[in-house]
Image 1: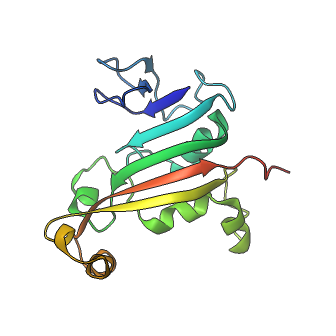
Image 2: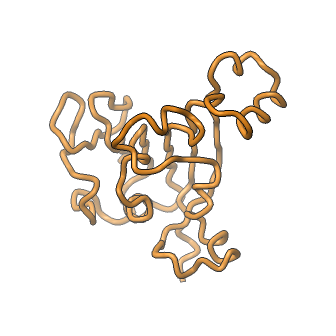
Length: 173
């Protein structure tokens, strides 16, 4: 099974759409803030796509743990959202957090252990396999070096961040 979580009316082709409201493209109506996600069994999902929802969830740790629970080992999880230095991240009053490259380290078991954060209420383990930044004009026309500098130092150079994760379940004790 492949899920598009919080799909709204823009379900990704080939995916099962999940949203809190019934609308065209929504196959399963479920409140993603209600845990556990009863429609889905442990390790039953091979891919998850999340576009512009992670910044809305009230508890990103619970959300990521639930994504991990329902995914099989090796499953691909793609999350797209507004970048932390973009006005897009701050303009919407329903956003509860911002997203950066560093956000995803907390969902890696080895990183939590290395940083002595085992006390965090997180069970999941994801490997970051890819990360993309979507640059605004005129930065799309600049060199990679200029974009890298702009992404680290300027507001509104980057609009969105996309992270691809791989579910790691072999590290369970």
